[in-house]
Image: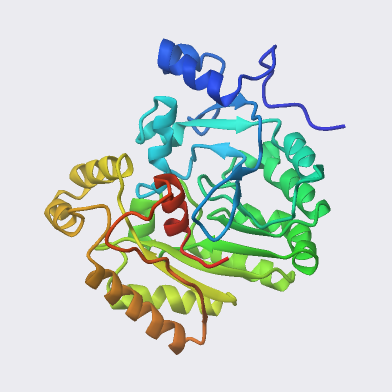
Length: 347
């Protein structure tokens, strides 16, 4: 028998679209009146989804899967903050304090994987919100999804900052032997000051790296993404070397890196945070990010340092950064580009 849900809404949980319309028409307070407030000060709203697999275009993968919307990791640079505006919610505190839980995701996923049209293409898990944020310990939607994907012999790539991923090393190891699976632990830096300032809700970087070691020992193909590397907080040569060395010491199969970008919504939140907490850095960030991306020369210099360190510590440069042209690529939506660039790896 499955575990009871965290709370009982009485009726079937609303769909994403229904809830978005309610928030638009009634405001967040009224529309989210049944969201459960937990000890972590976040509110959790159960919703139902009509599809578990989301088709995307213009990226190295065609399908994504995200059991949750919003994330209590509360990383100030997170590119997904701007997606919360689709719910008429702000990209600031509401991104990390209002979490949508797709309670029927596993059921819907199984049906999609069993459909005769499914071609067992690769699925990217955790592209828009962390599948192993703390609430996963209760709902176990990510584990259920992995079980379904494994049963359906579907290959995956999974990105997370959550050490809870080691709970599912049995499934992930089996997936590696069957259809294929790669896990990417996000560890932008091991610098204590940068971590505590920019990633307030995440586990300590070394705890994440210990998860890398445990997954490797279990036979999982796992590496690290230094994504995003945040200028001014993580980019001194000694900081970059300390991070790459720690990644190597914990047995990562590969490492990739990408410099932070700031698009609408996320940009407003991040620069507001800098103005409040690090006012002496405002001018520098405004100059460096006149647009959503840091200048190509600056990005190239960071990548060159990381490349040198990869060779020094004998790490496979598996994470190929995606580059941009002068203009936006035709047919590629902003959401798709953000997910691809932030992940910063080649599937």
